[in-house]
Image (cartoon, rainbow, N blue to C red; front, side):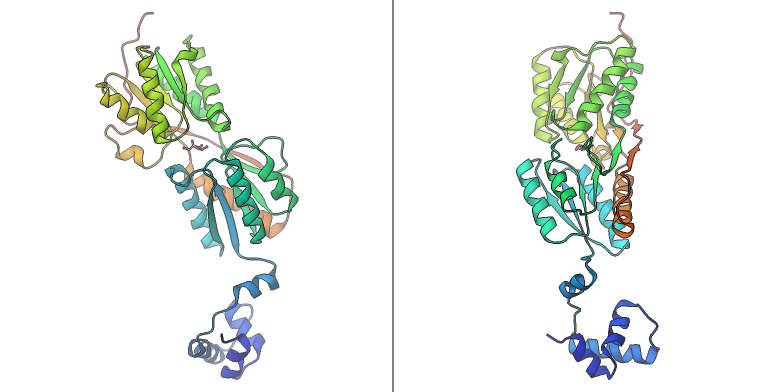
Length: 337
Ligand code: RIB
């Protein structure tokens, strides 16, 4: 493999001149630069990234750990992070924990061993262990989407409680009183916070959310289907269902339709996230939109600040959600009961 010395000899310049041409760290006469680039081309020289990383103590690489990269929400977040990171000269390594604490811990070890310049963590649950090993390693890290309270770390979140409140208030304003809910995994803070807000909105209107009207899901499509089957089995006469993420809402709509229930004519369905698929569905899905791209951009911006400027007191940023009205919900004549 040709080295930087071979290039310098071939172009009849010093090694430092070749380095300046490669890294743009100092002005080099155009004629000299052309000779260096011609030598690089002729020899097929490729800079040794490992050696460069050791010299700079930087790999130019960021790790992103997500619970389920097949979920369009996480794919959209990863996309926004990758775009912003690439613009700043960073590559992204995406790892999928599958919601498993053990897999998450294994990936954290791998990413730390590969000398990532920083990590972005969307936790598989509320377990702080993986984050604590990152903090012990003194590697820059930002927690995204799923809050990990009581830890001294930058966090970029969404106002999930307000988002749940928006969903509840919307259904109440449409006249619904017999309302069901499909939640996410109990250990996931966004799901729990959305239910708190949702209950608050119904409570303000004097509407109960009894235990039998709530079924736990798992944020997955099949989980949305199974939870909807369970709600139908209970014969509650629901006129509306709040599903705490869009992937499960798609599953719910498909089960309702196969059961002969029209959405929204018979049952209104509102989701959460605003993944692209909500626009493609028939009916298109009314949802509480997370600012997904902004979540990614703000997260990596905080991380690059840590990498470039060093540690500082932790920051918590909470981004707002917005109601996006589409076709899966409708007003009903308010029942007198
Ligand atoms: O759809 C996946 C869910 O998990 C989203 O609502 C997001 O907030 C994440 O926590």
